[in-house]
Image 1: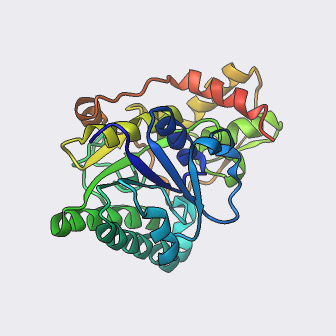
Image 2: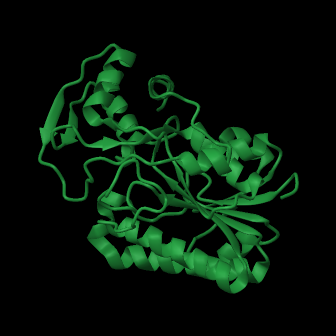
Image 3: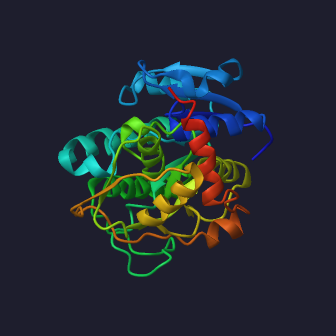
Length: 312
């Protein structure tokens, strides 16, 4: 796809986006970040001199047009809902995420964008697993609105590719964690639990702690995005994960070893939206993107713990 690419990262100031911004800037790509007006830029403060920052509203066509003008690649990270809250207001989920993305696709087509990289959800699009590890060809039957919105967007990407030859890659992320993940959002068990250990607060676990997820370190996610941009891969959908699952109880044990602290655990009734086990098959990404996760869980948790101790 050529050496230097002009990439716009929608939602580039957040946890995931800021790591992608850093990685792309380091590789010599031209980076523009599109973010909300009131966003705190602390995550990207150290690279502000090397990137362009554009403010606006994802749902405002004029703002979006300014953000996309002159770009080659769109990295679409914007999501207005979280899996756990998406079922509370399904109409909002569809209006903001699905309709907003269709507007984005129309603009991308008009402006001659070469490719869209879309951040999908390996944890929610498949629903209840019929087999483990879950491959990209597994049925998609989400049990939360967030997952339904993600899979709908994937289908529209496919449609626009079919109709207008707008290229795309879908990356179905498992559970990324690491520095810059704000523990106050309540997203990301590893960061939230570590923050509670740091503050000597009890950790609340829904169910008996045997819910198992596929956790992978944020720098590995950024490398996957880089590969999807630079390699022009043959498939359209890739699982991006560690390829292993760990229960919440196992996470707590590793955290105890890393921090040297023993947290107080409160077990609460299980939630309907939680799939019991989710492990993604990453063999397609290994083969076609030449990508594989590099940071082991214990090391990643240690890095996150070191960062949190300086996070204010």
